[in-house]
Length: 340
Image 1 (cartoon, rainbow, N blue to C red):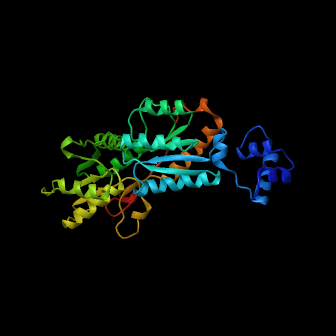
Image 2: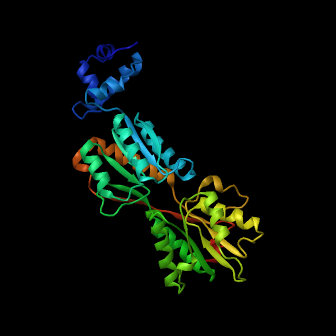
Image 3: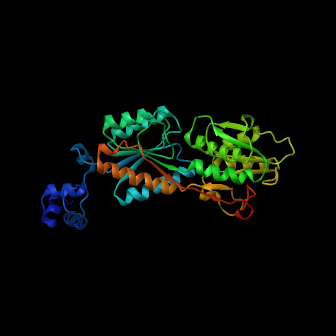
C-alpha cells in the first residue's frame, strides 16, 4: 500500500507539503499542488481521512439533512449536491428529518460526532438562533437550502417561491373560477411564500381566497393529496381551480378526482409547484412551476465549500440566493401560453 512518504519522494517535496496539498491549503503554490496530486494518482495513495480528522484536518465529508428522501424533489436536490461535492472529492451523509425538529437535532449531533466539515440543511426547526448557536459552538459552517428562517444569519439558497406563485396566480385568475388552495399546517416557509404569492396575484385581479377555501395538510405527499381531495366540496356546479402547493399533492388530488369521475381541467383545474421531471411523461402532465431542484443543490454545495475555505467570519452573512422558477404548461390546468 502506498504511503505519504512514497508520494513525497515521487513529487520531490516534504511529507508536510503533501499533507497541505491534500487539505487544499492556501500555503502552497498551485503548481506544487498539481505535482503532488499527480504523484498521489501515480502511486495510488489513499489518504486516511479519519486520521486527518483526528489531527485537526478535513474529513472531506458534508452532512445533508432534507425533509423526506422519498420526495423526488429532494432526490433531485441531492443529485445537484452530489455533482458538486463529487467534483471536489467530498462525500456526504444524508438524514431524512420528516420535518421533525427533534429528529433533526438528533441527526445534527450524529453528524457532528462523525466529524463532518459542514452541513447543508433543509430546516425543520423554526428557531434560526438554534442553527447559529450550533454552528458557532461546533465551529462548523451551515448552509440552508429551500427554506428560510426569519432573523437567521445563516446563508440560504432558495427557489423564488413567492414570484413563481405570483406568476401562477395570474394564470389561475385568468380562468375566472372559484379558487381553492392547500396550505401546510406546519408554518412551512415554502408553502407560506407560495400562498402569499398566489394571494397577491388573485387580489390584484379582484379574487379573494377565503379561509373556507384553504385546506391544511401535514405533509406534501400523494396520499395526503388524495385525502385533501376527499375533503373538498365538489357539490357545486361552478368550475374551480385548485392550487396544490406542490406536485406530489397535485398528483394525489388528480388521482382522487379521476376516481370520482371529475373531468380535469373542465370541471376542476389543478396546479402544482416544483415541475418534477418524473411526473411529466406526456400522458397527463401537471400544470406547474418548474423549480430547478438540482440547481438549488449545486448552489448550496458550492456555497458550503466556499465557507469551509473562508472560515468562521463568512458563516453568518445572512445572504439569500434566489433561483428563478418558470411556468410549464400541462393538461391539468387548461392553460397554455397562447391563451394567457
